[in-house]
Image (cartoon, rainbow, N blue to C red; front, top):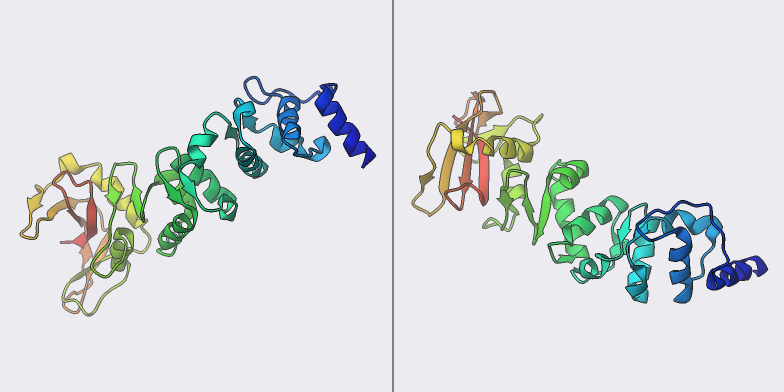
Length: 265
């Protein structure tokens, strides 16, 4: 206890001498420790130096709750920008400590532009993961845009729900399995990352062999010849013939708002 109090005294008097390098612009571990100590946070430099060094920016303007959040984030091994943190936290509702480290890091990027509810965020990710898509792919290739909606690197948006309440991605993933209740049902090859396959060929939207056609129900249909087998023809009338074309149905002529997609003849 005497050692800890002595360390705290040194922090307040500014007599601590560190060999730890400066981790951020104008911030040394010493400076960060001082700010935490001023706000009543007891710091043990023998164990806390690591996460203290991950906090960048001007921490003097952070409130106690912001500092607590900065500590939580930095202690997970994630760098914190103190200048951006208040505006980021203003976009979140719920307890961020309930997020895994990888989800927390992804959430911090998302919160720069999107309002996020922690519990809904977790559920949305779980819905995608439950369809066989890895978290690694989600965090590196997709952007969460709120309300069970996702944006790909090609600018495609999987947004909204089908009549049964399934998300767009959940609905598309119905084409992972054969459906014998339908006369014809395109089934994706199970080796494919279906979302990335759609994203990849959507980048060829200007080279499609088929013009985008307005359907009577107001949706648009585009057929892309992928040049390789991406699935098979199922359903009770299908003969499991190999399929090389990708049909994409969207809510707009530019094929941005994806409703569904499936292999086809």
